Each structure stands twice: as structure tokens, then as C-alpha cells.
Image (cartoon, rainbow over all chains, first blue to last red):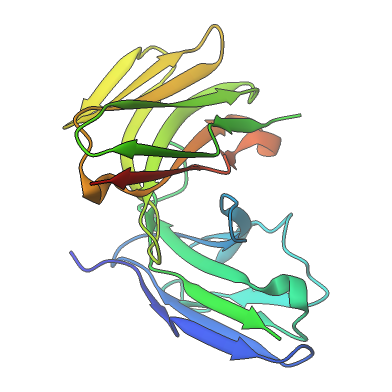
Length: 115
Length: 113
């Protein structure tokens, strides 16, 4: 089966600019996750969707970050305006459904550099 | 506080040697523990998953152990290969909303020829 697709793979922007990332999960996977991974650290969950509904967005900086999954398939994550500390890899993952026994499959990530 | 601590932070070994990576956690109530391998520039890939009742699980040259009493896990890599160079991340899931999925910071493993 095709894996999780993400685009773009790399993005360089200046602080205060806006940026959007796109994710297409594995076909049939109901649950989609966005993670932020700062260099040298493990991924941090930003938001979790179950179909097109938000399950957990407790660690999403809502003043500047937003995410949507309108049709319950692909998803976009937006940062507006970006700060220097947003430089990180943004990983998208999907699983068949929610529940900790289901394996998450990760995409290759988008590396964001904010200058 | 629910935490996952990994050690060492980084490790360099010669090709063909064995190594063991450690993961200590305080996540409670515990559901399962996974080890992921993350190659540079790629997303993590699952190696093993263990629940409370499992003590050991193997995936080729990778063997994970779990002691749920002491809340410790280890990942043992046998006869290391250059392709084993990667970050290894321990991920613990709990049942409460505060401990759903907790990622460790990873161990950066480098295999030298």
C-alpha cells in the first residue's frame, strides 16, 4: 500500500510569514496526526483527527497554528505568522483508527526553516 | 508527570558489534511501548510493540525487552550493520488523556565500518 505522503519536503520562510503543509494519509486510515519534531528531540503531538473531527489539539499553539481535515482524508497544517522557534520537521502520521494498539505510519516530514 | 527517558543520548559502535539502548518511563496507567527507528530525513518506522504482559519481542536483529514492574525497556541490536545508523525512539502509550502517546527524545546510533 502507498505510504503517507507529505509536501513540500522542505520550506524556508522568513519570520512573520505564513506557511502551509499538506498530508495525504494511507487510504482507509481514519486517524491522522500532526507532530512537530525539533532537532534532537522526539516528535511532539500537535493535533489528532478522527475522520474530520479533532480528537486532541491540547498542544497546538492555537494563536498561530491551525489544521483542518475537511473531508476526512487529506489534511493541511498552517502556521501564521511563523516564529524562529517553529523551525522543525513537521511529521504527519495515520492509523486505521484511534486507539493505542493501532500502529501509526509516518510520512517523510516537511523540514521548515524560519529565518 | 508522564515522561519517557532514553539513554544514552548518542552511541557510536563498530560494525558487527552488539549494543543495547535503554528506555525508562513513568507513564501510568501503561498500555503499550513501541520502539521506532528513524533514519535521517525520514519519518519513524515501527520496530516492535509490547503490551503489559509481554517481556520480550524480536524483529530480526532487534530484540526489545520490557519490565513493567520497574518501568524499563531495552532495545538490543545484534551484529550491527551500517544501515542501523539512525535514531531509535521509545514511545509509551497510556490509558489516560494525559498520557496517550509520549515520545522519548531518542538515541542517536552511529555504526562505524
